[in-house]
Each structure stands twice: as C-alpha cells, then as structure tokens.
Length: 287
DNA sequence: CCGTTAACCTGAGAGC
DNA sequence: TGCTCTCAGGTTAACG
Image: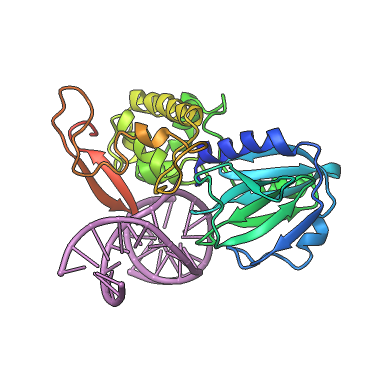
C-alpha cells in the first residue's frame, strides 16, 4: 500500500487515534522484515508516549517524548490495522488501509496501546521498522531523500535545476527517491500520461512547458489521490468502509489494451517494462 | 552517470 | 482441483 497518498491516509487516520497514547507493550511475531528487527527494539519503544504522527515520502513516523522516533516503511504489501477491544471480547478492525478484515497470516508486529492495538501485517515482508534515538539521527537518515512533491519549493525552477545535465529517462527520474520522494510506479505512470510525456524521454530533452506540466500534474494527482483515500488495488476482500477510491480514476495504470480516455484520441494503452517496472503509455498522446 | 537485472518474499490470477 | 507461470503500490546492490 505504499506510495505517498496511501501513507498520508494512514498518517491522517492514525493521528486521530494515537496522539498522547502510550505503547504499553510490543509483540514481535516475526522479526525478519526487510531489515531484521533488533533485539533491543521492544525495550526502546515500550512505555513511550506518542506525541506526533508524521509522514516523510513513503515513510510513516511516530514521534515519542524526548525526540525519539519510530520509522515505518510499508514496502509493497504492508498494512496497518487498528483493533478495538470491545467489552464483550469481540473485536472491531478499523483498518487504515486496504482491508477491513484483519488478515490471519503475516501479522508480524503488534503494538498494544490502552484500548486497542496496532497490528502490522505484511505478506512479502519488504517493509521495516526502525528506531531512532534522536532527531539528528532520523534527520540524517531521511536526508538521502529528495523533495516532497507537495512542498511549495517543488516548483518549475527547482525541477529544472535538478534535471539539468541528467540523461536519465523521465520515468526513472520520477521514481528515484533521491530527487523527488514519494512517487511510485502508479503515480509516475499517471503523472506522465497527464503531462503528455513519454516515459522514455530524457530529462534534458524536456521543454519548459513539459516541466511545468510535470509540476502541475504531480501535485494535482497526488492531492486528488489523497482526497480519494489513496488507491486500493488487488483488493478483493473489502466490501465496505475504508478503501481508497483513486484506483477508479486511473487513466493509464493497469489499462493495457484499453482505449485512451482523451477525447478524440483513438490510441490504445500499451504496456512495456522500464527497469523492471510496468509502464503504461498512450503512444499517441505521450510524445 | 545510466539502464537493467536480480534479489529480497508471498500470493493472486491466468491458462492449461 | 491443481499445476505452472507471471505479475505485484519498493528498494538496493551489482553489472556492463
């Protein structure tokens, strides 16, 4: 569930529930996530009070007292579930993303708070947890990331400057987190379609107008996606409640062989691989 | 520096 | 019912 809008949805829903709550206990059922959870992890975050929930790029961050932090990355398949304890022992699952039903398998980390618990589920285990003991440490760690696309500083002049002398293709550029942080495969495809730019076009070949469109549509797509609750793909379980709806707005992603949605365009969406990632394009619109 | 590939994992869906 | 194959919202090291 992992691009910027989806993590933002988790952040927004989580902060309604956990601010000023303490982590009473921690249960690790499987420490072998992308990076192995350290043995002292439980001791580090146990009894800590959560002051803030933050997001940076595709990372979710819990800030504790005394400037200590827990960083969570969801990888490809991580989800967070809030399970309410009811008096009669039944449970309600307020899934923050994707599924209303708590999966039975792959619950790897459980944070118990006062009246509920947070369950981290991740079938593929590409996600990870990382604890930071100071603001300086987490800032150093996050410094490798580029600008937030929704930041005001992400504008034409900024983008033009960092693209200068790059011979990368534009799609790989958008996906490279050290330049712009938070865009993943779905939104890169959508942004390029809306900007009418071929994913293989070299950044140094982009015209000013195309750079302006990239800025405009990056912000627009991500904002709308957040407004729609993110994208929920491959979700065949959920029937009610908290799923994202942006998947219904996809213009190119996962639309191979379907017609281009632009008026007067008779092009068909084609799919090919770029650096091992599915890339969708209308070759009539995207030059 | 650049693009690609493989690796890290499990599961869903397609096709047979 | 079941097998095999491909693909998946991410990241990163290694290679040519």
